[in-house]
Length: 216
Image 1 (spheres, rainbow, N blue to C red):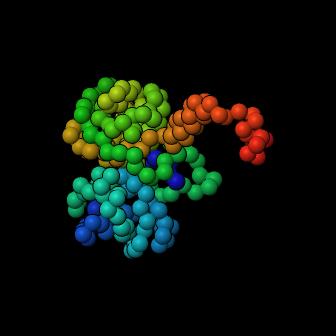
Image 2: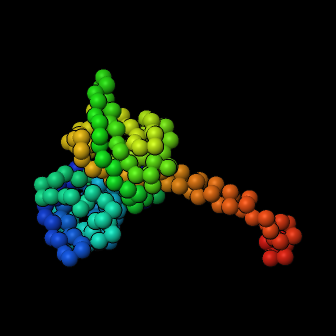
Image 3: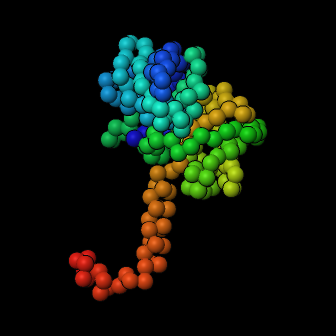
């Protein structure tokens, strides 16, 4: 579990591609301070497991399913990536609950300067848009951000200079792809509502039925 508050920018040092997988070597500093084999580190919002590390870099394996559904497949040597260690019990939750399980890949389609902020519009798949609301939370490349507005095709976020300076969104441009994860709480609420709707349609569901089957 993560918070969406990026700790540092790492750099892709090496990529070892297998038939349907990759081994990434990423240079870092902050996230390596107390690292152990088996720890989780979010890389552009994707939860990866540390399989090896030195004083200045770590390695993580990326399986075929992750490559298929995230922008990690597009990484090249020298690219910057957002890094965050897993949340510890007792830590401040300054962002929102981020699982590191990407829901889809979006594409930046517009960037507009508005005073100090850069308003960024992102085209996104339905699997993400269905859970977004204005003023709600979304993870973009592992960064916890607030949704400005949303429609049936895309959504917008507003980036302050600090976010631009310490994350990859400061170097992303129109046409680039980003990993998206919608708010976990929203997913549970939508699932609960859908289940309630299905129960309402059950003509045979009654107090008698529940009692006969041990629910009452």
